[in-house]
Image 1 (spheres, rainbow, N blue to C red):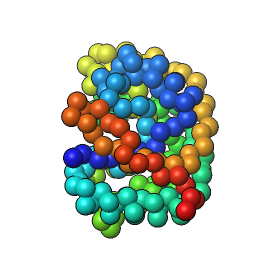
Image 2: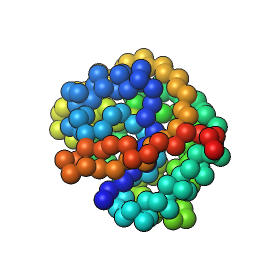
Image 3: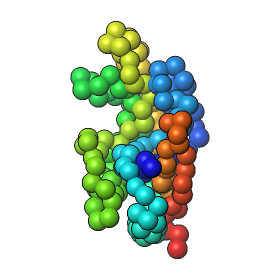
Image 4: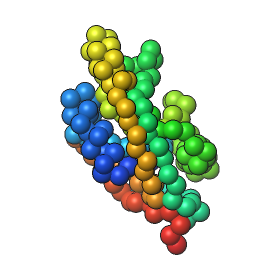
Length: 170
């Protein structure tokens, strides 16, 4: 089964992202707006039990933190993906790195860039058009993060929460 680890931002940030995703992201119906902490990986129930214990320990050692989203950016020319840029902060970087160590599968195809995808799989012309409009937007979101989620993928390709890990909670 495929699993992943993500942070879901507040409803206001998700609403902003979804206002674009419903038009420009074919994964709109598969998963809510999120910040991917660990890309999808395969695991069986035994490994998930071990990882769940590890994730509880990690979450217990964290305090809530604030993220800032203040512009639209892109992964072009690698892909025609457009995203809300989450300002990189050390705690996010450290958390992402910690989820690549120990018992966690070490499958990380891309360098960790905290972001919330709002458009992907666009043609070149559509990408140029959409990014040209969105990059001029004035965005300013501050969001408090106090948890992350272990997700699993259903047979229809959608993702659902397996367990939520609240920071600083024993």
